[in-house]
Image 1: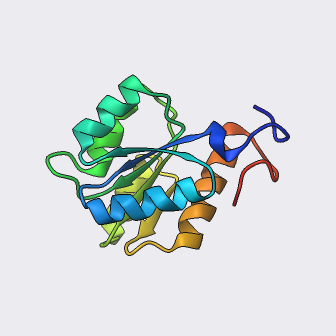
Image 2 (image 1 turned 180 degrees about the vertical axis):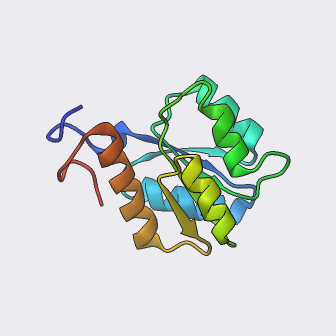
Length: 139
């Protein structure tokens, strides 16, 4: 894809959150600007999605049942080593921020999410990762 040909509909965003309300808010945000959303309610479901579908970016809740967002990402990256990821959490402690940085998380976003911040961060992560420097992607 090039800057002139990339459209939001070219990108699939995996949203993993055990809170259905949060999952739906994030889905509405990304689909509202044209991205495709893939929804998972657990880390295990997220891993299955990455196995079965093309995913361009992961939006992961830190506190998922059984596997955390970071643990999920570690397993996902065994299949998709360079997948960009954004962590969403209600408690961004300093130790979590350090752990996210060590895991090459693109960004950590606070809950409750801000529509503008989510969309801007998703667009920046996609542009950076896929080498699309300009206006081809919303955000």
